[in-house]
Image 1 (cartoon, helix red, strand yellow):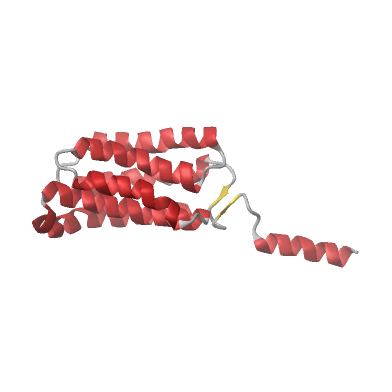
Image 2: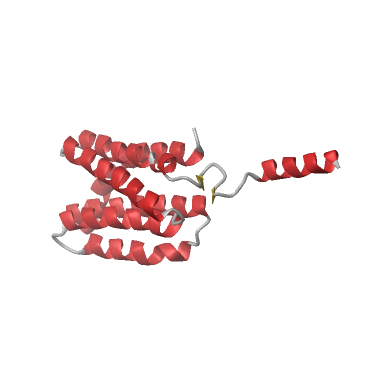
Length: 179
């Protein structure tokens, strides 16, 4: 299994398990809805950092989209809008900032993965801590498919379309031996 797929699955499991306990601990400071949205924002921000690392994108490019989502987390009475905005910013960071070389294929992959993940969350109708944990994990399970759908993303090497340095060195060594 390639590294981003495995990491996305493990990250989704950890996110699902930590979502409600961390939100519950922060509820006394921020209120229930804001605490929940802040935990979702923190999970999105941490995953955005992983995406930036895998694509070797500068962290400064993540500040604006994550800042918008953070502002929406503090906006009162906008839970549904926060989730929709979060899905859009999630797609923007992944396909618009980090892996933006294949626009049409990236757009199709985003529609399938983000739409499919959101549909699974909606089908779970999460209301209890267990159903929220399962819903978040299912969302990230579907997100792991992105790395199989977009060509040229070489997540195991952490770059887009770049060859493995060992393969390049091996090919150069073989050329040197043959001549």
